[in-house]
Image (cartoon, rainbow, N blue to C red; front, side):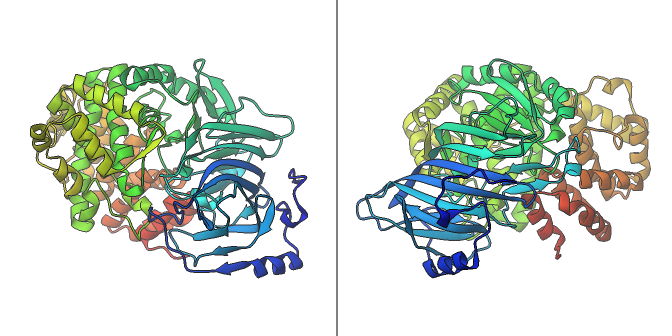
Length: 624
């Protein structure tokens, strides 16, 4: 691919490999020094100088699987500042300029979680830092997919996943959720492909493969996002739409037909949507999460394309992040529950507004059961991670991505709603979002705000706020959830366990959530023969619904129901969503199917994103 970075200084030609002389010059201006992290234990950034705006110019090279780029930062330095610090991970730094003049720089010793600190000398009058660089082979945020790994199998694909601290592997940045910046970008890709970012986006391909982006609202680094592929767009409303590979576009547009209704419901609850457009892209199946709340462009897994719109609560969740997380952001990853607990609460409120209380309470019931099971397991292994306020110093912040910040956070907020009444609580949340928009929040600042603006001393004590936030486990005032529809599901399952006969008629109009409750409630004592009867009646093994498949694997693997193993293998090889991978591989290990798990993983691993690979490598004690 011909470089499109003309006009750059010869000393910073990032579109070609440096000559031996350039390598020698670089080594003469680069040193390694000891560096401490800043106030955020997962970033080397310091308060003395912070970034304000990024002007990013990049070329995406699929042949070499690298991005060659210039990151030009507008900065703001405090009086007396001598350095500005950035975070990088496996970036090849070619050269650095401060206000147009080349400068030397220093790197910290490499850390497996943090990468390296990049220290650049500045004066307190400095305005711009320009970093010429290219991404390395171990850019953990990037997944380069060959054509055969995509839905249409005719073009390669690239997508990023920056959360929690992976943005530093494709952009030199101050990679802390507590530091926000605006950005614009110019990106060149092959002319038959479309580039999209967490910014203003094109709706069709350009003739020359060059795209321009603008993000005028300030965001933290973890919300930087890029996707490149053979992608098309279909509008759903004037401000919402969906991107996908051509073969998935019609199904995706059908699945997300209620996007505009969801946005309107969210606005009615907690104030105006602040990001302009709300679009969604369906990524290839290796995407490691259900969704990622990149502003203006939610990244979504194709595993939610159930064909019946039954899994769109995930979309409600990512939309809710446009307020909780994107608008008001956790200051550090120890405060992660401030993003996710609020978002799960908001998600349930959106689902109630669009689909009704009966429907949303089924979701809440599943959430409650999952939380109790997860917390019981974690109390045996990592009890401190069952606290809402985490302590992740010295650890990968991705360790904090459990059901605790999401679901314990949700029930904590639900408990407050039930204590003070929905009207007071809604007014409180609306004022919280609007009063702190484009700001960061710590747990302690939130507690102060809570005491000042919502809870009296008596209510604070009744909720037991400190216990919920700072103590392990789930408090015994966990709100109850009642679902009449699940009561009927329980009756059908009990009838089967007593009689061995499956009631087909009673289940004809069940939603995905009812089926999940049914499967999740199957007793441990069930036999492979009984599972075969259920499978014959309800065709669970043949299901194309990923949520149902992943749930079905749990009792069947435990009971050594061999008929499911081919489906388990095809599922694990084709799906990269960590939510499904972790329990399925754990089930195989728990059933003493270690060799089967490793044989499948050997085939599947090349298709997984680094986020999923790291978790599975640890689980399976994998060594290449």
